[in-house]
Image (tube, rainbow, N blue to C red; front, side, top):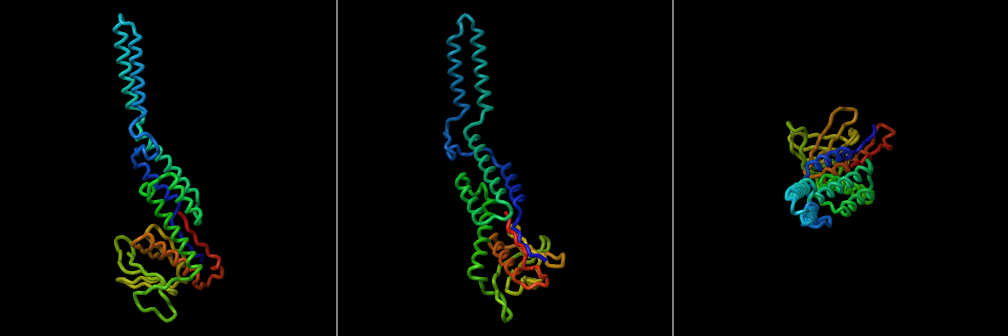
Length: 279
């Protein structure tokens, strides 16, 4: 049975970002995009219209006061309509911001489900070039940085092997502890607080209840934001652990991937297991 690590889908990320975009006000500081902060198109057109109105009044025959009154009324109505209908500089800056956010999110979606370091670093560069602020693309930046951390940890594992950390309990001879984090275990109505422990031979939860699973029993592992979701092989049982930070969840997911892949299985095709990291 193949092992699999997933890090959420690009579609879900983009849909959340799109809903956020729709809730955002379409206004922004014009100076941010090099637009004049005070002058606006409605004001400019109103001034031009007023100048044309004065010229028309000067050219209108004085013996026809009704014509002059009509011109003044039409000019006032036109100026008011322009001021109400045409976007101001802050609205045009907001439209420019929305356009840049759309370009960035399209780029995030375009890297696909298996982005590498170059793809992820390119997205960070694009966000800087588009002058987007972190709070405007918070969901995307959080995922991108989490995936970069996962890439860095995989590279570290290839260079130096598994890290060793102090455990919360004695481990059997030949076993080593590689990860410990406080977690919330279970569903919302039955959450239990304790510690997730990843050792050479076991995935363990230590809390009000004790759970120990060998890596050969692990089928798939998924990460969804702060959650690490473990699917057991040949079983419908799912173990869900919520870590305090996304960084902890990413580290747990990558180490679980490595340990599950290295575990001996009865399946001779286990060496061809595929592990996926997706935005």
